[in-house]
Figure 1 (tube, rainbow, N blue to C red):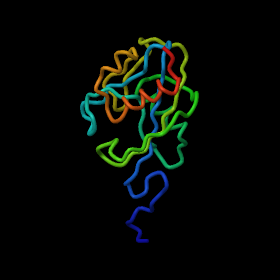
Figure 2: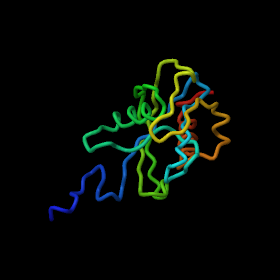
Figure 3: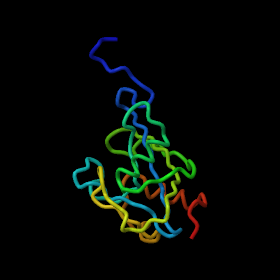
Figure 4: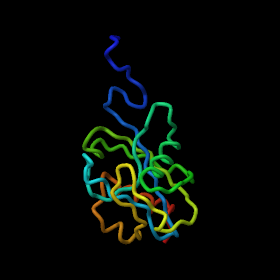
Length: 156
């Protein structure tokens, strides 16, 4: 292999497939933590989404990735409750093939005053589930939320 070519790795083989993590944080059994994507984003600018994203380096674990992404985008520290499922439809991200691992995350009882948008989020909110279901969400996040409801992780 020439010195100039990047060696393929499992976490990003030649830049063709990305692995990401999305965190589902349910607050007070009635609200979901959501971010409004940056207006400068190349995918779904200004649309609401679950907090999440990709790996910073090949040594980061799935669990560390989702914990870091939720913190960077919302200002909230979380811990993993459980792995829920993955989403792997080929066209779920218009930029590249992305497979996401979806995690149910817990946080201490924290109100909206503690939320702080950061990283690639312009806004962060705890949104009532009934309102989230009316939004045009980024990526396949509506499908993710629907599967969370079906799984029993959210109980109204």
